[in-house]
Length: 390
Image 1 (cartoon, one colour):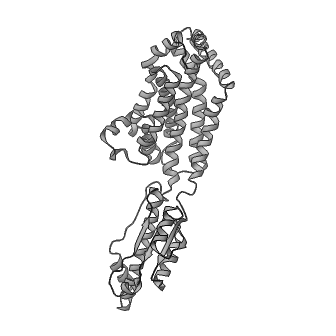
Image 2 (image 1 turned 90 degrees about the vertical axis):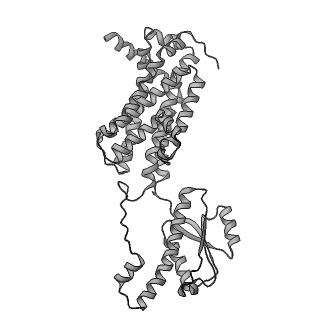
Image 3 (image 1 turned 135 degrees about the vertical axis):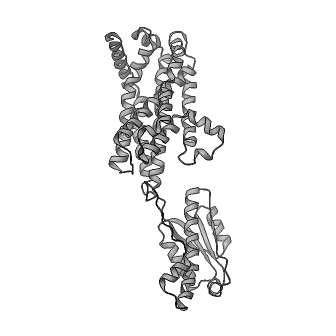
């Protein structure tokens, strides 16, 4: 038992020397992960988009439409930046990306509303960006409802109705919303907890495949295997150990920064957070090694890792629910480590359920981390017999 540990230690020291002499390791293991962590969390720092530019086309210009315009401008999400003489000019402003949407008040809007003739107030908004379009739509719709409610309230008040009666008539059903675990509906909480770890896992994939592939590229593979006495398991453990310690440190730093510094909402225990970080690193490195063993080529294995990481952003289910995707995509998504990471995060960290409630996803990450066992023979054969072809 002592001899394998000494071999692992010597190979790990050798790997540290290789990492120290190659700036790619510094960038991919430390600098880029830090950049990703701070970039995503600061990009969405406000939580929700604010002051989205909107316009107004007011052909009525009554006291009511002016009041509604001021209320629209007072909303946190929207900001009235321009008044247009006609719909055509407002449409061109949307096409030039000067505004996200606009509201159109036709002539006699106030008079028709007071006479119960149902004036047609229109609003137009761009759905090129789903988030901004949806938020602008919400505010524009709210404004039109406020206008009709104000007139209805005035009429009922003139008839002698009490404030409680007016409220019951205008809003017969009172809605009590409870956004669980994220009451502020903070987009930073939704997206930074998925996009940042997906990027970190990309680096785990790539640097694992790269470190093995460069042994062939720089003709060091036989030396590496000789240090392990041609035991591929010892060789891989010694090589991956320094990367594992750095990757784990970066993952735990990311989680500490999220929950300890930025105070992202989480209901899970510290143990669930630590287990999630450990599994993410093991699965990330395991998949990178597996990709090289599956395709023992530096270029091809890194291409596989890049493709798998890029697709993870779509199939993890953070921005679009996986249950609404094609059944074939749902089945394929189970092959992506990031999907299982996200599910464990959602179940155990975000919602605070016991860690064993996510056992299928924990098992999946363990299986992915163990995938290199399938291709050990291919890796050993490549290190001992293959010749690097650029």
